[in-house]
Image (cartoon, protein in one colour):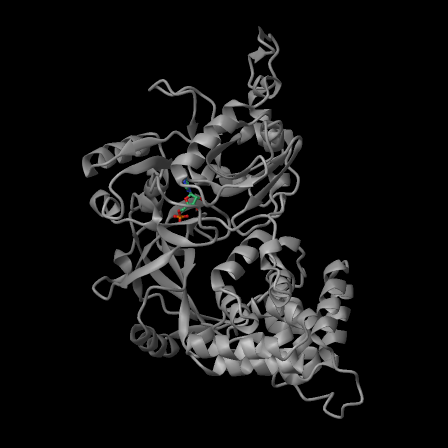
Length: 570
Ligand code: AMP
């Protein structure tokens, strides 16, 4: 593990991508493939390959306690070191070197992964903690630094998985696209390295039930701008739910989120609705909260805003009652694999036709699960609608002028959707990449003027500056917190604000400094939801600071009434 840790240090020491890639490639070449393979996973900032879906389940608080225990430091000393260094791994590097004498066997990379597996399998914080303690006490301070960084999923050495792919290509003399493709299909950068080392990248095969990366969209500022990338567009509503990739083989169905976690259990009504496709398939779409009531404009139902779906998220067990309260639908807009063939290299226009065929080809018995009709006969006691979800092909229109796009945009908003997705009919599906083949055109929600009530030190290059701000709105005479934001200000603004905040602390809570409520910020967000996370009873989705508002007094910040107004409008 020492070699790998030293490689990480050298990688962190340069800002040049090419140098980083060369350092990692050199390490791969000088390391046996089995060990290099596990290192590739670690270098991507993960304890386990993506497809495995294994997680350590070791929380930050537990790690904090262990580092404190091993270092013999007080909480205050550790807090000070953490503030200075910005992450717990770096703090651990300052632990006393208990293994310097060399009488203990130091862990190899393979041994570290074996220890990670044991920790992942262990139940309860006590047993997990013992596993982590064992591992750390065999490690040198430098090894401990990177073991902790891998456990927390953030190496902070400026290395992304894409650079590890480059290093693999360089180390084993293959091309980057070959490596990328194998990694995309396998979801395992370690296995990809092993194949590259053997000259067998071509053997990488798609595995059903192992999630692929999701194709991402770029924002478009206007209809004109959207059409500057391609002049004929396939256009769909942008639904506000959660992205979901469904893998279907006969009656077996598994659904994965954008973070490639399995979420089938959160939507027990979906597998049934998806089972029985005429071919094995991987579908891409959005799970949304759905109103099954016919609309005034004659549609048989419509998507509800994200806030409605929220109650359904992150649950392992979903009661029938909740399924009835918040019914969902799966809006499908793409197909990545069908009938044994990977379709991602086909143009969207072709994939769209294949998708239409797949969804209309569902076995009649399955389709008849929609209430009312079963096997061609009217059923008087239909299944309860909300207990069987709908799989709906996302409707597609064509547009080739900004005027047409604007009309579609208004219609989408009138249906309560977020805006439009504008797609190039010629485009291939690029897993995990954000390009200009998919564009999103969204309505800007109103911004809020808020008052900063508490601040925290940042991470990474924001070590030592107060860059994380908790902010509030007025509830009568009282300020109630509504969110927290990290990004948006320039470095010089942050350093100026840091100075000001340090001079206006009202309560030092260690991690958090409560400050005088004087600074007004304008914040933007994608969405607003009800939540008891903050005192206001609301939370913002993806909040970001638009600008400082030194022109406003704290009294002029927004009040809860305005928040409610925005919430109701969305
Ligand atoms: P954003 O999350 O704002 O970056 O927007 C991209 C997301 O919009 C995707 O990841 C999907 O979850 C979602 N989305 C909603 N409707 C569609 C659609 N018709 N096509 C593609 N993505 C969609």
